[in-house]
Length: 145
Length: 312
Image 1 (cartoon, one colour):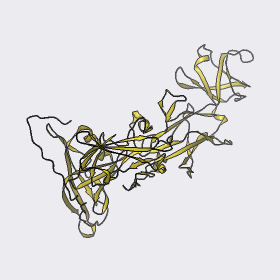
Image 2 (cartoon, helix red, strand yellow; image 1 turned 45 degrees about the vertical axis):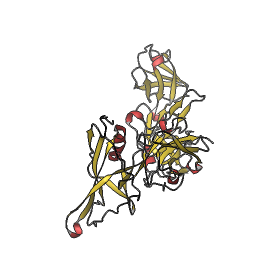
Image 3 (spheres, chains in turn yellow, orange; image 1 turned 180 degrees about the vertical axis):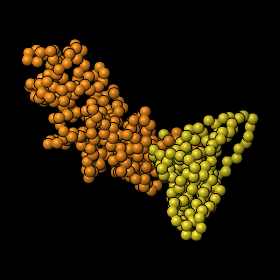
Image 4 (cartoon, chains in turn yellow, red; image 1 turned 90 degrees about the vertical axis):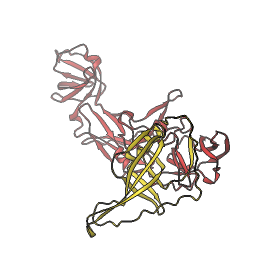
């Protein structure tokens, strides 16, 4: 059984339970704050646009377990916070050179009912040391699927 | 009389004697135990003679089970259905019915059910989950063929919660909220009976997981971590981002009283950097276990690690 080791240069780290706990670090997020209703009848949402690319097909299938997972949690500076997939769809594209890429939106703090405060998502700190790989592009092209 | 005719067990090794079965089940798929109610087995079918001439004589393996006028249901295996008759009479080990004899009856008729002898019949099941009996027993009714299919998955689901036990701090942590074990007992019930509990006899294990309908509920591919080496994970090669909390699960088969985990670190060219062997905490025996790898033992040039399980 093999586990690949990577050095983290990304900030959004999810874990989800879908026939076992899974962990994956996704590319940085655009945060969208939205509030519906007014004052004491307001419901607030924090939505994070997450994604990743250069995925193999097998990784893509495993990550699609997010759609089936009942429980998804985001690692924040304040510990693991429950979140949910905003839409039950998963947008992914296929690039001939970079493998598959995936993009989706998760929602935090969503609660049905009256008045939910709008919190900022505490970001989990990135490591001090970040490894940056430099690639020299040569003439070959491969499909990473 | 009831008999357990079907369980979710799956053979994982048919070359050993006795065969090795997997008793590991997914809680989110139907966990089916099938029971057959039989009041008497058919021993033979012949054309009756005096005093029941021109009738069919059914010989069975029970005592006197019918009187004249009793409804009798005979299972015909040729058509897979129950045939309803009204008995014309009965002796010890015989039932007489008013119908035309055919030679095929002798091999096709398998068993008899006499509902009047067991009024309001049902089967009662109780579960002992993690050595504690559940407060409530479960009742299932028979279909017309005397078969009761008992799906106990929803009672196992009640034992599941999502709270993760593993805190990324120990070598292995038993995920007791997502796994456990149970035993099953059953008895036949009807008005006026005094049946005692019968133990099913196996120790079953459950994990919070789902299988497709075609796969059933048995998680046979995760039964043996040493032989099949399947981590409980959807990724072919899971990824650990150094600096982030990470663990990975496997199910500890109780046939291994102790387990050792050997970790090999490799660099990007596939050269072995280091090897470490640790003994796992046997509190995880029979449970889903989260394994944590000590980050301090990972070299800066490490590209991937491999895990191997073995008995010490």
